[in-house]
Length: 176
Ligand SMILES: [Ca+2]
Ligand SMILES: [Ca+2]
Image (cartoon, rainbow, N blue to C red; front, side):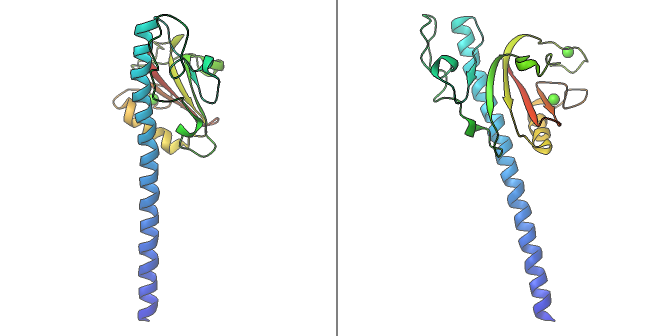
């Protein structure tokens, strides 16, 4: 009888610890993306101040497609603006990828961002948009809460963070 009770308590403890570890892992992933957005915002602002244009940075591409991390020939370019290239591994979700675009409508995924949540899109062309694939809905919502706190409307369609539950794509307006 006592052994049964002890085993039950142990399995409850193990389950609790596993849950807590899962929660911490999830928080770590969310934090990594929020941190990446902050780093990219600083880099994009500096690039824009120097060149008057919006940078793009595609993970896994050659230097000509990595305006923030690879040397560019334009005289006004004064980077690198990132410590290293943007890499697929900076998307912490399994098999996920990511790119930074210089338009918020990249690949026709979006028509724009309703930054203030009033129902009208405010940024519809030029701007830096970070795209991430394979983002689970619960993680997307946590990232939204971290960046879009207090913005009205539906969390997945308003503010600087947008999410498509069908494609599992997360879109973050980094700089505009
Ligand atoms: Ca608006
Ligand atoms: Ca949002």
